[in-house]
Length: 180
Image (cartoon, rainbow, N blue to C red):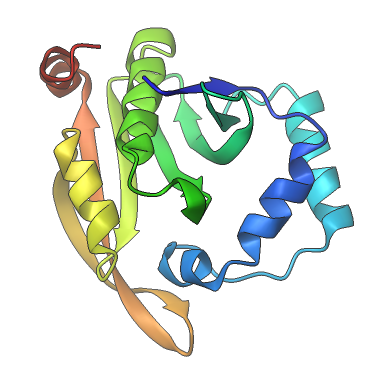
């Protein structure tokens, strides 16, 4: 692996806020666009740092080479009774595209979800037109469960969104395939 995860630091707020301003990201992610001030971003990062949330976690994605943050990822809706969670996706700065960091990020997330949190099921979503995200998720073992029609309103119109999932047993095959 050429990347590693670490907890957020207060100084990451500026980097995260700058990522939010990249239109190509905001147009492809499933959530709605929001304008967020740096002050609000700082508070959000501080809340993630200082609260002990049991239902979510966010991590900075860092490059091994220099240790600097290149993006972030998260898992939410962690249900410790039903052993399920929702992988919320990845945001990696475009300067780091094409290096395999997306695949490595998902593999590290799945390793944590299944080997540390002991989840049985992990779901994720992507917009129908976000072919790169769907391809990435399928590459690491996610399977399409549904296509939700008109589930996200963004950029003036509705978008369809895929729902994908991977089970712990399926992760074991992926783990062997990628030699984790």
